[in-house]
Image (tube, rainbow, N blue to C red; front, side, top):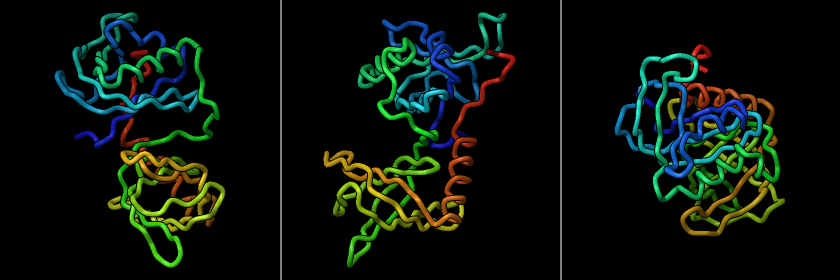
Length: 218
């Protein structure tokens, strides 16, 4: 059974461009099947590896080819982006066409997640939820006080079945005050042992979430 989060990994923008099969209809092809079923409606993270750019989309599975039919017709799934995320699909097209790149390139892939967390603002800890994570940073969604960018904060991350909680020293990079996504983007800088565990957690998430592409199908 799939993780709650599904990651589709395209090696570069040229590969992505070949898979934007019908831009008018908002169709995206992914050359792998996994356990994706026809008719599924799901959230996916579309990652372009050479840019470490990730676009989140809600899609419906409208086609499924389980056996390859030559080099130009590999096995895979056809995904239709739902109307609510068509603006994000357009951003994906801009990435493929070289018309948009992230303003600040990420050093590491970003993964969706849903981990409970708490952070310390004297004199108390406040609860939150980590919504995405990389090897060096995370975004914590919270109703608690927001720390000003540039200031330090101590974070405890409860990773559930992935192991013991992480205790991280972090710096606030930015804040978002919109209610539906209220929270802070953090850069984690220590301790070294905890960062190493964080990196291993991210590697496990990548392995668990990514629908693997067979090299024979590309």
